[in-house]
Image (cartoon, rainbow, N blue to C red; front, top):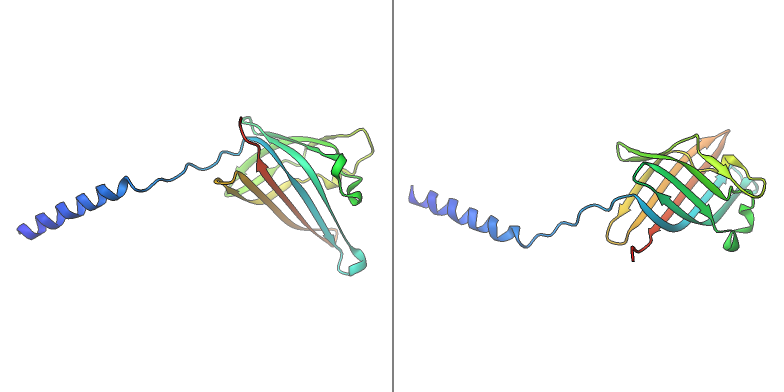
Length: 158
């Protein structure tokens, strides 16, 4: 009987000593301002029907579940001339997916293609140590495979 008491005490002491050694960082919160890229690859099945663009964006997620992004036109891929300059919408996280609403508003001082606005359900990963968010959406629209990848790095809060 005494060895059970010693075993119990040994286990409690061991667990208590380990608890101080473990530091678990809290998950990064999504709201904030990010710098990043938005890449779209469209593939209709043949090399001549494949195109892509990569644009630089400043993306803001708010605590009230709205977002906006602004395209940096100074360093923009020449193939992305139709991408809307400023987009605003609503976001939400549902079952480990980031949802960007389909009613996003776009404004630009030039004619833009609103079909290029990222919307719908995205798989996403937050890398809290680096403040990185990656959002990926692979979809088939009118027989064209579209892969949207948005990679964002949180701006420092200085």
